[in-house]
Image 1: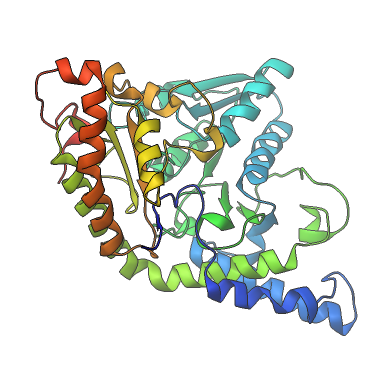
Image 2 (image 1 turned 120 degrees about the horizontal axis):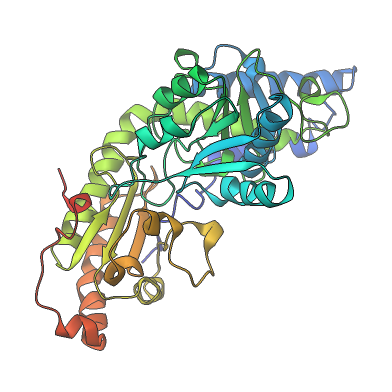
Length: 401
């Protein structure tokens, strides 16, 4: 049997059409886009095409609002540091308690190294942001608010257009880490007040090592990478041409396939969830009415997620505990702790994240194996054996529509 890959929030398979688009730019069209001769001009044209493809996917007003980076982490760090450098008298940042480490880690560093004040806004049991707490945290010293578009562990979507308006009323910039949302849900940035947005190619069937930051026209900006004139002097360094071309092709594919794939992938996810919930003593985490179409985080009462993953892995099925960037940590997920997931389920959460590559056969294979895996682990768990039978409704977040 072929392996089943259900860890697409960690990374996606690079689409063969993306690889085909990239290949000529390794050997045949190898020029430097900054060179004035024909070799450079051909490559510069390919970069313009990729920029416009990404502009279309994001719904940006201008193609020059797209600045290519090495990935989402660089884009996030660029946004944070630029906002602090450009907002005189403002040294506070408002964010959520469930952000990706690419946001939380640099903010932790800046808090201790530069004395900035960080407001980390909590979430409810479904992972939804405390909007009133966010509003109260904004003030005359806020340089920027940064809230993710979609959570990487639960798939919960955040009302970033509304949050951007609130930030602007306080005179602050607004940034969103949209790494998980781009290519999965429609975006129309020109209809919002979002100033900056981060994305990464390998989350939407593009190559690794390439991403971008969206900079709304007129947004004050200081580059993180200084050097040559590339990217209108907003990101120095010779462009990663094959990566940029691949990201552009991935953006084109995502835009053309998104509408049809949203419904198909969400149907697969829901089928997977219903089958697993029938096992009992488990719940779906996150906002099941307002989340990414591909993401399901299921917590098993009194079981260890690591053990479930071990048995799935032996059967050739890939899933995860949550963020790949936090793997190896013995601490429970900061996202699930912020949601106040009950202790008996906190370590038993498994994230299944699908993509357009997945099929009903993939889901059927997982569902054929899960009953035996869960039964075996429950038989070995003293706490599971002593608990009375329970339904899937451990919290409001478990209710499926």
